[in-house]
Length: 414
Image (cartoon, rainbow, N blue to C red; front, side, top):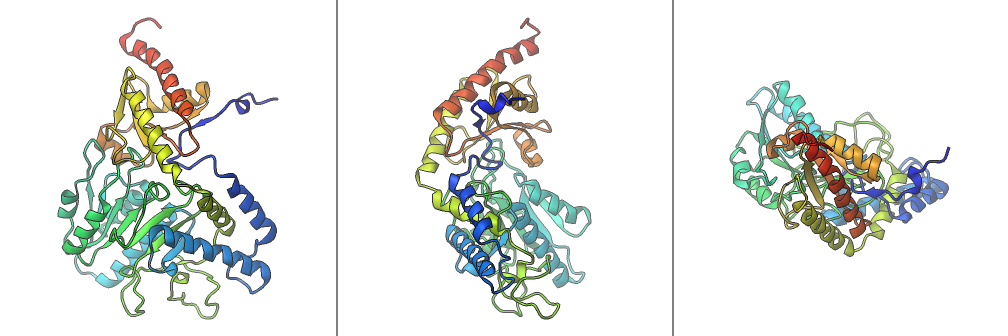
């Protein structure tokens, strides 16, 4: 049976979840890797193993350059941003437990905008009575007040977490200002910054932003395959001095570097990189980074402005977050009065072949803070492959849905 949907042009506006379409070079590079280089990186000295290792090493170097890491070894390759965040949080918690030995309960500070990868992981420790957790709320515009955030940081604080930009409303946070203040107010606390929504869209500098740890996604702004990411590990989180306190290694196993003995290596990145890396995925990520161009961000900003302008004049539509493109990523959150956001997303998909995302976007506390509650809202996120026609198609579809929604609310005939 012929699939008529496949013949229609898909308007993909869910780039905050994962970028699509990927550059054609990505699939080509992955296919070439599987054909020519698919050994196990670091496990063996033969030709295929060396070729796979070269891909992994180059990926590490590229990510180090993108976040301005002082040394390539300070990029630990992961299976995505959630993997990186878990590695950082669990590693810090275990290190704190070992160091505290029953002394005062440690404190962790985060924002209400964090992804569930942070919130659920911290909630696990808080409900177990192992930490005091302070969650800092935001304004309706999605901004965290740096002074309010820092007021909750004290001498007991061991970790402060902050997303660089909300995946819900796209608001960009003052991570550098908060990082600098944290060093002054809680000098022993480590600072974990989530750049899943900004790397590939905005310049990132881990050193200048005072980040001790930085979680990286390869499949969003960098336009690489899913299952790729990294964790930047700064010197305060993992000192070169082997006798200094450091991030605890939660994942253990083979590294290829140290085969003898049951202890993990102590040198980065092997100390935190047990198991076989997703080398084929990183081959695709390298191709994606090579394919990026400076025009991409300008395209996204122009399309976001067009979408915001169109929604501002749409009847029965509420837009959340900052009013313009300044201070935000290419994420636009809205609701249509009288229609559940999941129904809006479903109708856009089925009736208009437009891909957006409705709901709470794995960040439920953010939705409560901005007033969208448990139902959430509809998120549209443009990418560099979108066009004015794509934005206009969404606006036309919203216009077609809205009159029926208004009729439902007022009880007037359709």
